[in-house]
Amino acid sequence: MRSVLILVTVFVLLAGLGPMLAPYDPTAINIPKRLSGPSAEFLLGTDAMGRDVLSRLLHGARWSLGLAFLISVISLVIGTTIGLVAALGGRLADWVMMRATDTFLAFPELVAAIVIAGLMGAGTWSLIFALSVTGWMRYARVARGIGLSVQSRGYVVQAQLADMPGWSIARWHYLPSLIPSLTVVWTGMFARAILGISALGFLGFGVQPPNPEWGSMLLDARVHLRSTPLQMVWPGLAVVICVLAINLTGDALRDALAERDRHE
Image (cartoon, rainbow, N blue to C red; front, side, top):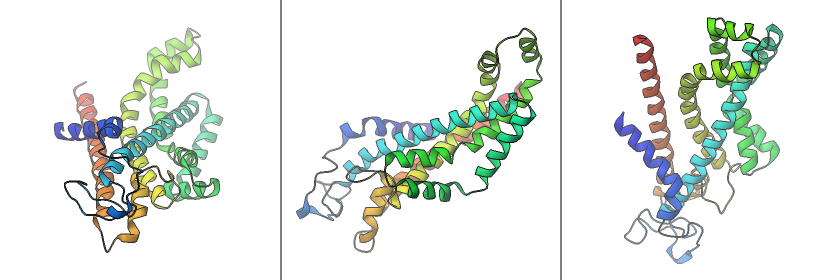
């Protein structure tokens, strides 16, 4: 667990401090040095435009992790709101919200995101919208389930009898019960957002050149896969290791919460 947390911390620091650690300008073109292998000058080599791969990876961490964080937070807010409305709004609201959730769940998230991004056009904002719209459903289900279980507890009933406003009840009685479970869900969705950003970037719908992003780096490198396969290895490893570390962190959080519940 400690090693996983260290790894996640490293990626977070790279996202924040990566541009300051990068040895070169990630967009600087150097044609004479194009497709160079790893060396003392370029530790991970250069791409087809002669740009330093290490610098692009470090700058790309800000795009990949930063956008994934933003998308997962937007999805969390949307899903939690819908789930609480379903739990607290009565049978009609519950039916409407859950049928909408089931409808969105019927479509594969990545396929739906690709369709939405394709209709809106390539770009960062269409990427954010597409992945946010297709990523809130699990939050809604968890929030609804916990909301329904909390609704019958004594302190909630007393608050309702005291005519406490609904938003106040949700803030002080529902959200504290939701936070642990939603945190576990959020870690998994954060990792899925990174994969989604990379997938859309690889298909050309994500962050546009010359901005470096791990998925777009894979797209640029695929043409030279046979001659310089390392061009695809580095951004691919960054995605895999980052997603694996975040998923392991989520598993550890889930186990810790389960252990706490057993002792309570």
